[in-house]
Image 1: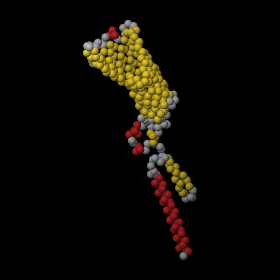
Image 2 (image 1 turned 120 degrees about the vertical axis):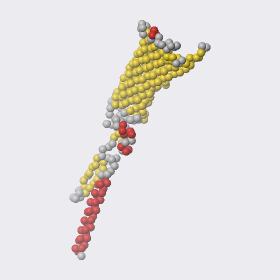
Image 3 (image 1 turned 180 degrees about the horizontal axis):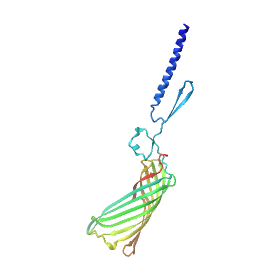
Image 4 (image 1 turned 60 degrees about the horizontal axis):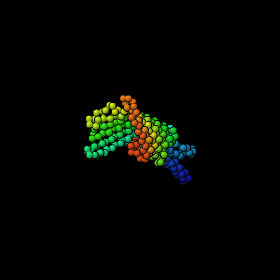
Length: 284
């Protein structure tokens, strides 16, 4: 009887050890199939000497960077952890913008009516360097083209090219996606002004002028970051001063000098553009 009891107790001990070992194997197998969203898991296993030891499993974190545009298409099965720090300091920004201004009106008098139309296209390409998180300075290349028509016949045109310097201050209203900014700029341009016969549309060469202009402006605006490196923006004229000088192309005699001052929401200065922020993004 004593031998049977001893054999029964030994069987129970062996069965318990076997069950504990099987359970540990099942837990370890389940953890090896864990989702990649788990960054670190620690399991405590028992060795034959009953001493615990740690098994660390490190899974790399998926980080979204702007340069990886494939992440925007919804790839990686939703396992992308977007890092959008909004860090602007010490980065170079490539910028571009345009403004289109059109106007049409009709003049009526005793001799009949005249349909007039004006069109102006302004473009700029610039580069800016961020001195701090909020302050940037830059250089711009400017282009401007103006045409006037009367009864569908070109009567005058003016084209100018030039350069400008500017400073910009960002206000992180709803950072890191949405910023407002204030910009102060000084521009100088030069080009040619032409007059045309209102009947035939032929240029009157004696009326061709050389044009030079300087301008100073304050332009507030808005910038929205689609990604940490791409932003869309819009700006408008709060204050602008400009002076344009015309000299005859043939004898260089001074013809006239015009000065303009505009305040608050000048539609002629409403500009749409984009920015490409170069440099480290996403905290990398």
